[in-house]
Image 1: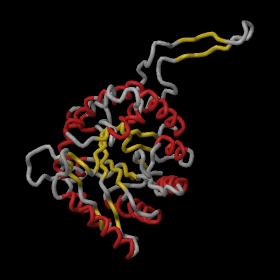
Image 2: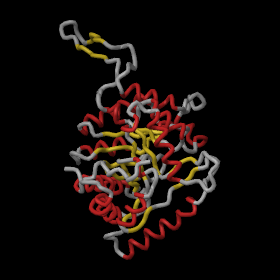
Image 3: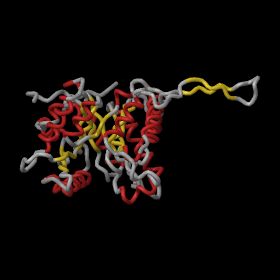
Image 4: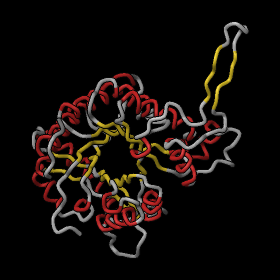
Length: 351
């Protein structure tokens, strides 16, 4: 472990993009405004979650396409897109298109596994192939190959078609996904919470997103979240071609209160207190362990992060915004992250 934390090189944020079912346009507009604010504050990246059949962003690619036309510098990511809901070929086309529109700023994060509540949604999602779908890492490998320019078909060439012999229409076919965005393959992230996923991501040259949820796989009692997360980071880098230089981004829930009103501070404290019991022990059959939310002044949060074993080995973060707060709360939190917490962690705003 480094004797001192690495200076924070990239500072971003993650939002779920909640909206009112009676007025979804306003919720999506709020998300876009928050992304624009992030760019003005000099933050390096903005990430959106993926939610299906919920009042959250169901189409991050569409939202980030809109964001790409309202921003010029900030990187745009998904954290994460569950591939169980996606066709890798079609997703590769959409991602490449948005990357081209954004000028090469897209950072797609993905995960695998069966869709949530699969028994209830498979009839609508895969009516003819539900029992044949492969939700393993093979689905990620397919996406990687397609984004990185490996052939999807053997159709490359030119076909002559047209209404008349005098005016033939030439149709060009490609054996790789179009548009092809050469740099996108290096900006693909895997969202993992286990040693197995960390190793797989490293072996396949992806970047690694580690969040506020990990699997407690050892026998340690009580399990230590930071040490488990640290083991994932080290496993990933040990199997990545870039070794210690391989990119890892950490995504804890962080709520600075420097400029918060008394009412906001009370709300934030209550939010964290309600979620604290789940951090005491692994939850459910998968033994998921949650990190406590970090609430307090930027100085207090920076002190806790500097003591965090996993944070000490990364230099990129995408702090997660709480799910259920109001737009003005996100403005306050994001502003404090950029102007107070970031500098306390050694970060400097972009631009």
